[in-house]
Amino acid sequence: MNLKRKLNLLEKLKEERDTIEQKLRFGVKPRWNGNTSYSFFRELRESLSTSNQTKLNNLKRSMSR
Image (cartoon, rainbow, N blue to C red; front, top):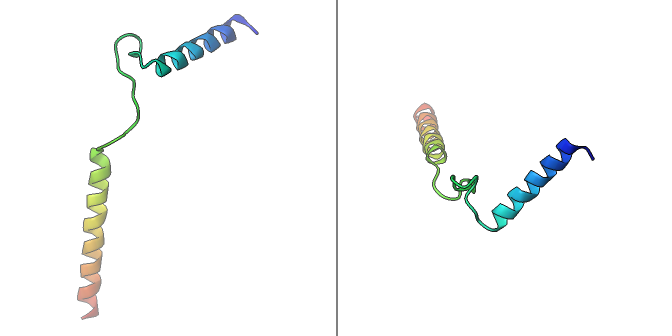
């Protein structure tokens, strides 16, 4: 195993240990745990698809008359 791979593995193991111990990343930034709750864009996409679906249904209803 060359030196570069050893250093990479060491950093990976250190990162895993810090994750388990809930330490701040690089001593400063909190870790990102993914989108666990509210997402503005998810809400926006849902509202747009709902309004588009409603518009489509209204258009179908008006065409069938």
